[in-house]
Length: 85
Image 1: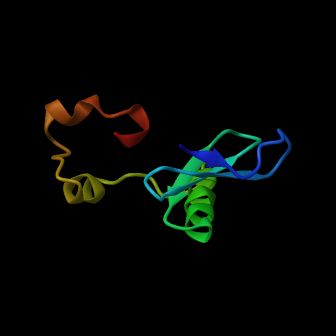
Image 2 (image 1 turned 90 degrees about the vertical axis):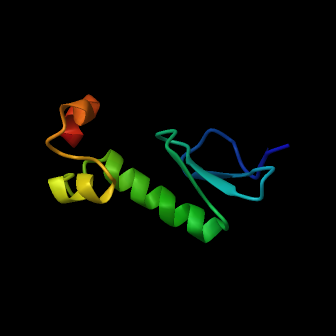
């Protein structure tokens, strides 16, 4: 059973120890979560997720799509969200 080490509804981060050994870090203010094999890794992944949520990061390019096995010119791949097109 997953357990949380802190969940008092205030600002900060709560950690959930998952049954599979992963640790989930949840930002209490936004509800955004990420996970890792350790608390530091989960926090680093959460920081990345929060940065992207706030509009940080780089736009997806045709080279990115190709690296992910998608053809940027293939109309079947146009089901991507607008921000990825």
